[in-house]
Image (cartoon, rainbow, N blue to C red; front, side, top):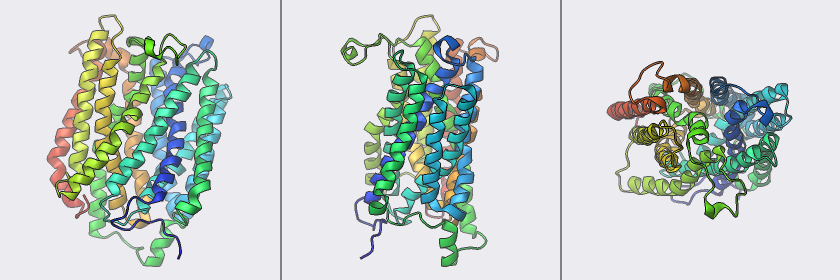
Length: 458
């Protein structure tokens, strides 16, 4: 009997989910490990091995880089749908990503920018296609899809946790340096590719080998979009607008929140960690590991909650879940605003302010991001699946770009150049409280109309 990686209704999650979990874990290890260092490296003085850029310059480059890695998946998804298939696109993309990280480690300006360009191109081929492969493991109306993407999301964040800890430590350690951190990110991507190749035939079979366009052509699904398909694409577009506001605020983690950790947070190494960490202060990059650590703790809880609510027929719609995510994000920034108000008095504040903010942000992320990925795989027409997933990441492109430019205004907002409500950095973080809460309430109000456009799939 031939092997089929697609799970039948009532079964446990298929083994292919575990393989894609590990593959994505290592790719995200490389991405978040490097991201944890990027702004810190750019603002570090030349004596410390960095470029010595201003906060504004570093934040804008950060915004363009993190934005473009979410723009190129549109092109990568189209290439996969038309010619490569998700399998080949993933392999080629992962190889280019690894080369990019190794280029960053060469410690020259041309190699640094070449490395960023390679990562952007490689991520375009990798990111949307690995998510589509997860969706391909399940029948269309399988109730486990949201749960599967929540578990898959654990792989993303396990990689983020390990990457920010390992690459962050190597990059900021006097015993190693920036090149070690960037090279470690490249090694992570190589491990991801090796794992995927070792288990693909056994756990995925031929999944993703053929382009979606060819499969749809054989099935007679090529032609103008039907009204229901157009309505569903409209629902994706409406939700993407709110996703922009979510990630614009959330992505302060790699810029303004990391600078807050470095400059305004008491990072003295606790005594109980002294045996493990020889440095007297914790690396600022390590605070970025809080989000993935909380994801690993809470993702199984959220996955179970969605499953139980669905079984009881009380599961909130996808738009309502995402509205809740925005409200929780706003609450996290409210906590950070209070912490920043205390820091503006001139003394480092307790790290617990950042811990609480990251916890609330994580709960918001779990209500929005994996649910959104699952939603796209349900609503997108089969022949356009990878392309639409790439288009979904356009929201992240816009959000990251806006986040970088917003972070670049940190010092001017703190000086009161634009407005003055609480004063100092508190005013900067207050902006994200207001935008997140307003967006969450607006999405909750629009949820019934968006759900109708989903025609039973939201």
